[in-house]
Image (cartoon, rainbow, N blue to C red; front, side, top):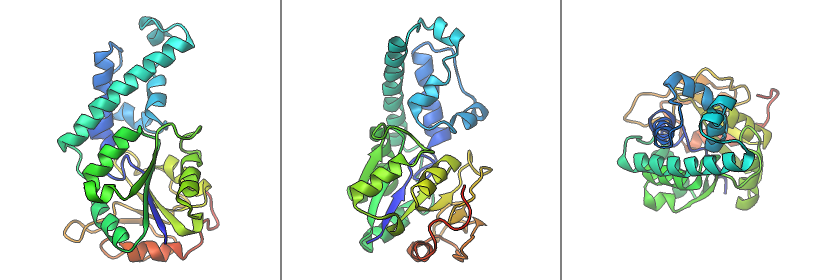
Length: 263
């Protein structure tokens, strides 16, 4: 049976602005790190794959010196401590319900499960955080049917294809029998490099990014009782009518996985 693989942040829920950003800023405050990211500043940081990598990006010589971080071992230990605390804060925000699932996620997961599809999440975020978002977005029963590939399980993070190649190997599925839902240019490039057809559901941070090579670009997957899906790019003529459903994904699986252009 086909596999449906989701990214986490910005795909399952609008986690970046309402979850990760306040969690990063609270962590920085607790550890005395002299940084507080604005929404605009964080819009640039989301282009960096991985939370620890985003934290490392703040360590200019002056910031590192102010924190007493003078060698690689000390810096690595500090970032691990920061990231552990940030994940705890983030999980609390998820469990508080401040980040509802994006439109259509629970619906299409139920459709795919009922049809016998394999379900997975492939993300560069920490696994505990990913599992928390997944459970909140689709419910505990459906979440139990997902394989989760997350965090530092691969050497290179998105836009490298490693996380998706790992998912395909572990699931025992070929790229021709899998479809990915992503929200960012980095995620699209990772999936595309793994030979995967990709549906992009844009988020507030990613709407203006380059999604050349995507099989479909939409505002969300949509729900029948919500606003109609806005189709931003439909190179294969999937003909979305109101929502992206399992029939849409099946039609996309019948198309070329690479097309003629690369992202």
